[in-house]
Image (cartoon, rainbow, N blue to C red):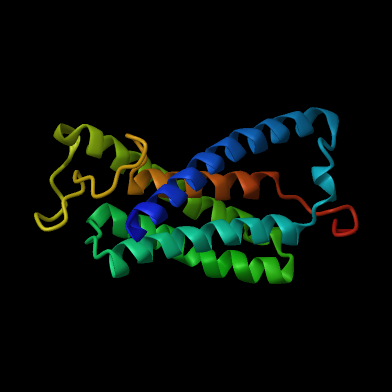
Length: 182
């Protein structure tokens, strides 16, 4: 088994786990809105949530760099837009985690949701190339599928799962009781 296969399978499994976590976090968020703390998640401080989101962003960035710099997949225009949304999240979330600053939430959430929208569009045009506007280059067409694991996990799917998990982590993050403003 090649290194590419190992990395691709590992990232695909992480993407699927990420989507399960998104569903779980959203369920907890909805439940917590009505009844208070669920599963003791209110005991996690801002740093924990922000560090988790930072780790997701770092893994996504490392994966994209691996595919382009090691495997030499040429990123298409939509891949670049997804990178533009993901890469700043590494720094923004990392700094916010170090400072326990949940004030980053609206900005990081905006980048995550924009990235998720681009990823979704990218997945759609990979599956339905007739919907493509033709704005990508011939050398790196946005409709090309350079990697596919389990018959459906592609590079934009990996990005989408990371963006959604970051958004979900930011959504459920709230200051612990001792961090709440007075």
